[in-house]
Image (cartoon, rainbow, N blue to C red; front, side):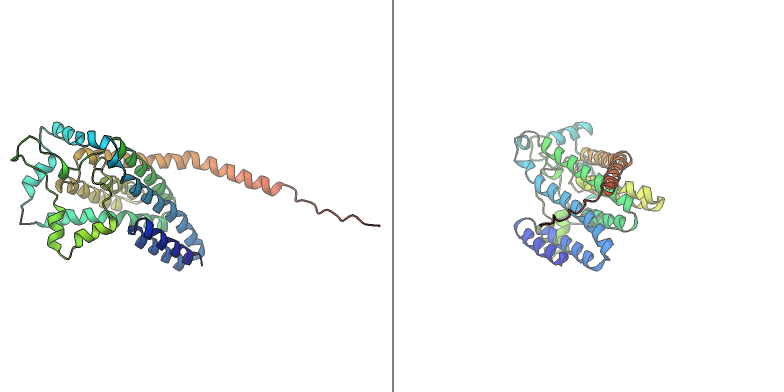
Length: 309
């Protein structure tokens, strides 16, 4: 009954908000219906704030390009990146060395699929942690909320064009520009896959390069993997490095974006861990004391009826 009501509410909400969340919501509801009652309740406790954080982040970031700062600061990161690397964007250097227009290589497809995996892998990791490592799942949830919140704040403070939208380095039509390599990849795959994918997940605001949330969220996965074992740590580290390399090469993000993404991911994970270690026990003790005080209160005595003579 609860799952049925959630399904109806989700479908109605998706009609007015974002249909991209409909599929994930239906999957979560199906899991709630299949799992035992105790596990389904804990899944809801995880899914509701997790999905809510992603929804609020995606919804609010779409407004970051409508401020005055979006018109005055949107090329500052590109200029800083050029200064940092001797006058030319690293994306241009990588594309000059590795990209051949009209002759796509295996690494073009590899980096593209790594980029697209961002819409699946973090959610799969979150579910795995909930299933196998509940304590890490709590830290994952708290850290991710901090990561998304910090990234959203930076979007509004310094809205930035991605490299593929960066202006030419000099006022000349012959100056090199950054290409968006995902577009020819999507067209070569055919069937409108590239456009269909963005119709589902959306690109609510392209002027949101700083920080790279693609890399921030991907690098965030390294920390719970490190807490599990060395094998998973190496796998997630390789995945994160592949994402970072691909984002710069394909013209999606600057090296500065990647760096800031890693910093706020690390901040989110360890801050959530400190909160759980220091604040969490205090709150639990307060709840336990409140529960004990309620149990120790004397039960109300029934009032005897007054005899009427």
